[in-house]
Image (cartoon, rainbow, N blue to C red; front, side, top):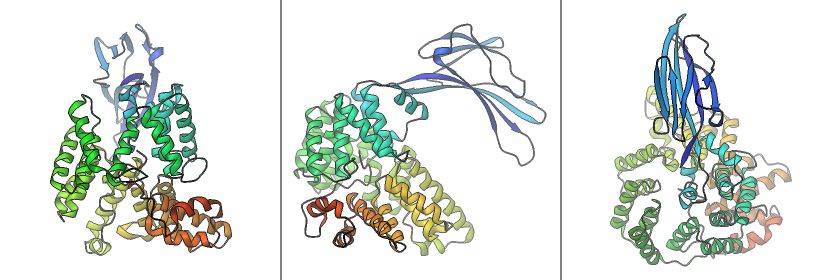
Length: 475
């Protein structure tokens, strides 16, 4: 649920010089609490073309405004009102009004569900974040923690997320227990240690308190027997089918879980049927599942179709499309093709990164470092992208950054940084880095992580199967 919080009055203007397509804007904002019937709204009007605006009435849904001789309505259903336009001194002017809205903080299942996956959290607006920050409600603490943890917008977002989750958990928010549980899986808590015992303790408490987020994660774990969960895809199938059949307000991502269960039971056609139903009901995770099924059949046309549909729907993972394009195939095109495609690739990966997709950070970093796919070689950009990927929990970014820094590491501190990046890569799922991690440990570069490495990561340890978080890690 959303409610409007501010009225925005924009005067947009554009010089009509040949070749000039730049628009400028003068913005005036009014808080909802400052608006009342009869109030005259003064606003910046650089062209002096437009008349006065007066508030006729105010409601929870919007406003009725008087402009000239007419009344105009602007509301949550129609939050944009183009009010007037004109010209002067070879300049075009437009008068536009907008209602700015923000999320309503509520202690309801529908509210918490908005923060279960990275794709959902990436849809938050600046007004939503301000509303969450302004609220002292435990539900807002949880939601703001998810924003920090899934998107890592600030340098210390991980620490802020943990603090917010603990505050929400102390107030009894069930999903906060689940969020903390997942932080222990990746070693992202203040202890800086992967701790599956703590993960289980927090997970079980979340389940006991009725957390749907915990139930979702636990169901996924039980499909493959990951993270100390029993392997029981048939049980998960039956549970989710019952949920879909009996609940009136089902979270769409349960379709992806059911599809995964059928895939694990070696019933690909049934899995595909469920994923298609999931897309119809609004599941974003079903798009990459369908895309990967098409790729396994070597149906590139269908693969690309699902990836493109996923991007249009807002699935961040789908923006990795063409990140692994063969360089020879790229170079085979003419210069016009290469310039166009390279620009499209970079824009696509940037969009995915804005949605919190760490693999997009990896591709941006890799191609910026190597100059492949027509990217300009820029080490500064490469390091910036890869460090963002590390923050987002992408194992490939961790591994590549470690590889690059390893060739330059001359001091003990630099070598320790490389070793810690290897540890992060393994924590986040890159199993083929485990041998090098073991060597770093034997070389004394990770003594402070002795207990974790000896319990989980030495080559002869096969007790832990990491959850594959390619599509919605941390969810």
